[in-house]
Length: 446
Image (cartoon, rainbow, N blue to C red; front, side, top):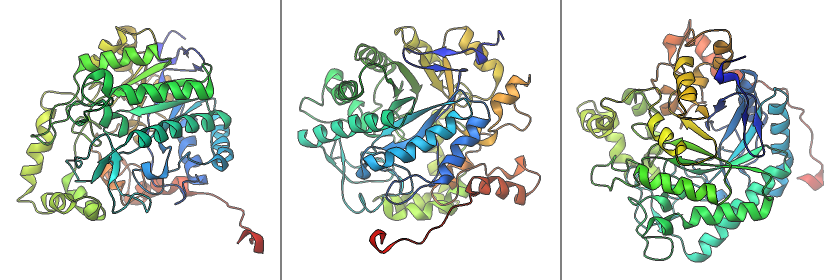
């Protein structure tokens, strides 16, 4: 009863039963039009059953042009509200909360769908994305106003669906980061230059959401505390911790109920998710991304040929030296929490109960958000409840789940964690079990 992990977390308008959130992660589970499927419901319920207090959804675009990949559910249409309501109802049946993460890709994508394929995507800048080479175009004021309205409508739909709140994904390189970052945003108008100007788009979205749903609906923001944007060495480093502390204060003043602290100005990033990047596996799956950006073929060559891999390994792994896999951004969360009065959630490879307890007791954060360690062990919270400090078969931080995602189902691909390859595949396929009620459409429905 005294374990801080299992104490309630009270926000202004929301109470969560413990201090563990499933962070945003998903696979290509949904329909091309953005409607969600039974497979997504099965996926989310796996973690709700495992004991997490709340689930932060995967990346949910507010516009179809803002998808990072086809096959992800969206919230850009009113007729999707009943589908999200069904998902929320399913998660609530396990006494867990469901928070929808509202997002827009901007210039950062994986596999563009038909809505944003072979054309520049909207961003804060017209400079192409440096890792994959996605082409982009700086948003006009009309583009910005339209996107602000789309986020407000998305939050309204989430509320109408009976969900428990929304999170704005202003971290890890997506559209909000492209405006916030001093290493990306090169605008000279009211949305560029000073930090206040670069934060204007995010703050306008927060204000529009509050106008649409009022003050009684939970709203949180995910920020990259330190951007470390120079993954490609000649790019600018981006925002510092001091910059993010100021943005966090502005978010609190604008009516945000919580902050979710991450790291890195792109995804994936050498520090997010923490751990390895299995280049041999990446070479086998990156072929689907070759045509996605002007640098896709260059990257493929670096992954495909062993003689070229040291070049990529130096670029990618040089930032990891001396940093742990677990609690990688805890000190950044501590610094932000010290300056705001709203709860702070921290993500960063957590899977050891004693590390989480120490972070809670020392005031570094109020909760943790976990993705890949829960993919490895969906019942991680229950294992902690039963007295284990670490899961019996812990996540190895291999990130094979990450590099398989563009081509294969989301799940754990570390075969050493399973008694056999068949057992690994059974785990991957488990969420696809469904008994759909098939019907013959009427002529009017065709």
